[in-house]
Image: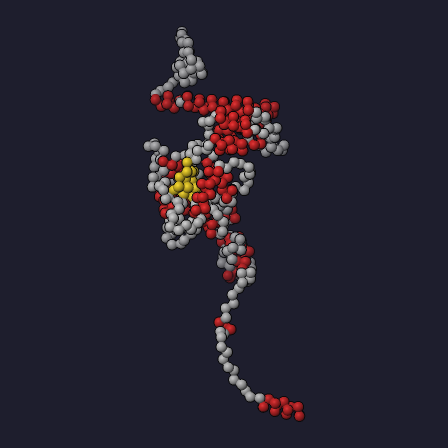
Length: 420
């Protein structure tokens, strides 16, 4: 009783103090800023962290919610992926990771591509950088292969298009495809990796090869689309979409043999930077050293080979190396038998055919090189199309069916036969 009275008196002696307002922001107004190292609850769903596939992940929710909210059953349900994983694999992206090292890259070629790509990713003040680099030159000079080596050196997996994709039975389809591939490369750049659009043989798909080539609507729209992309590289929309959305700039590299067949406003300075690729003697020797590097062919022999055939393209020496294997293949076929060739080469339990490499001496290479040159001369010399189209060239005493050196085309005329 005494304890209770003392506690009551103590409480009675205390004053009730009113709460005073505290200066400063309220607790509800305080914003807590997360540090860079701090990860939130939903950090794993951010674009730079989440590498999952929405169409595949949607199937994980099957039978985890009430059927009332699932929306359909069986194949028509909302928890069915409408696309397979193969649909997400790019049809145009090319990787050069499996390409072997040690091949020769021309310094001038690598310098031109490197500067073009670097300038397109830089923000240079008051400078209009051409979006397209056009590399043109003679046939078989290794333009595409040099581009592949340069892309691998730069660590770029480009989006590749070929001349066959620049024409279609549907009007406007190739132009739409160019925009799709360009935006696909732009999405890769947006994710933090360099990319480029690479078009092979542009003149073969969009150029006019004389009066005999028909100029279609698709040719016209391909030229116009490339011109529009070169003028507005950060605003490339699909046909029918008019949303003003800025996308990353994508450098374009094209190859061809003769860019004079293209539409002149497309190849003008400011839209396309042109580079004529004509390999020098040192470039040809360097490329041939890469071709024959596994055959122990010395540099002296390679120089002699290149100087012997100065007018040939670089792919001539690749065909020459493949021609040397003819004797080995011929021996293999004769030993196996022609009738057993299919069983040995297709789905054989013995595995792949292996035989020792032939010796590639300078004499052997010279021999097969002259044989290849002779076949080229035959193509230029025996032009049967002119003979067939100029008139009725029938088989006979002076016709084209006579063997070589046995008629009017070769040496002396064939003896006349008297009809009984």
